[in-house]
Image (cartoon, rainbow, N blue to C red; front, side, top):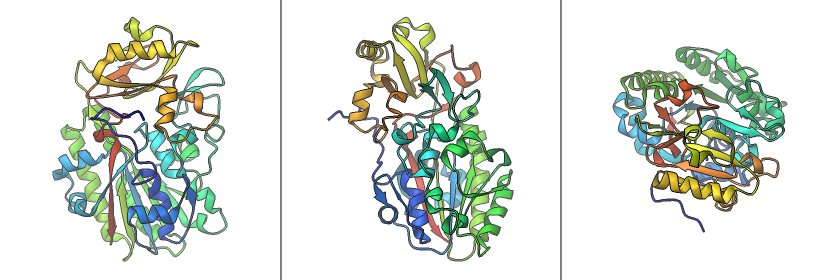
Amino acid sequence: MIEPPPDLRLPDYHGACLRAVLPAALDAIGAPTTSGGRSSADDRRTLGLPQASKVCVVLIDGLGAHMLAERGGHAPFLRSHLADALTLTSGYPSTTAASLTMFGTGCFPGQTGMLGYTVRNDADGSLLNLISWEDATISPREWQPQPTLVEQLGTDSWGRRVASVGPARFVGSGLTEAALRGPRFVAADSLADRVDATQELLRSPHTDLVYLYWGDVDKMGHHHGWGSWQWGEAVELVDQQVARLARLLPPGTLLLVTADHGMVDLEEDSRIDVATTPELDRDVVLVAGEPRAVHVHTEPGTAPAVAARWRDVLGETAWVLLREEAEEIGLFGPLSERHRTTVGDVVVATRGRRAVVDSRTQTPSSIALVGVHGSLTPAELEIPLLRVVV
């Protein structure tokens, strides 16, 4: 069995994983589902969730468990509940498109094809952006046909009792259609407005579970680093509003607070560019994924040689696997036949502060991001699950 380097870990897909959160939350209100080969009752037991008449799930994009532990001074409410919190893993790659789809469907990234910030669209060889879906030649529902958990429930009973609160621009967006289709959507832009909308929904007799998403912590981390004061201010705001939400929710509501991934901050010499590094570029057709979790698509028959060269160049700053090796260890969970070749011929999970970029297909602004994620370090993979009965 291939083992990861000591500073990396594999996702806990069948245990304490983000994949289990929504199935367990739905089971808590009496709405059973099945996903990932497990029943929602199994997931609820794994996460230790009680039964509840109402559940609120808050997902804070980019708030990794290690980040919250190290900078918890900015989050007194969240910190006060860490003693009873669980540490979960995201899936691989530890990135928003993969994580939110795993959250919304209960399925593994290898089943959904949501395998990075960008992936190769095998239909035409182009890069498909799984966040923006700009210039996409395939629809989100075609790319990701796995039913969401709310779709499993149907529209006649439980499915109508689930709501999602987020910005208006998310309505009909590519990522929403791929990952979270099904719930009633309530538009609210500011975090305060989302808190107000959430508590109103849960005080209604017609709503039993609300999902609230907030993305600004991740945004501040990307642009300024999670060690910055800007990141600290973003966490202070979300902590204040989650504390307010807890005060406003109807008594007995189960409040769950989690995240989709963590983050590491890069240094000036962290990035290596495939476009200007001949040994990395040789026999490579396309680089997809993201700087911390790379899919390398190669000329036919060259994958072993490409992998060997990437190991030589990157050394101990990356874990380099052939697609077959990644599948053997279940890196993406089970791979569907449809999306097996969406995975690169060579898969690269970076270590330490290393980032692999390709200036031919990535913009200067994306290459310059300070905070990044996607790999298997605990700082990126491990996320909190706070469980509070208000």
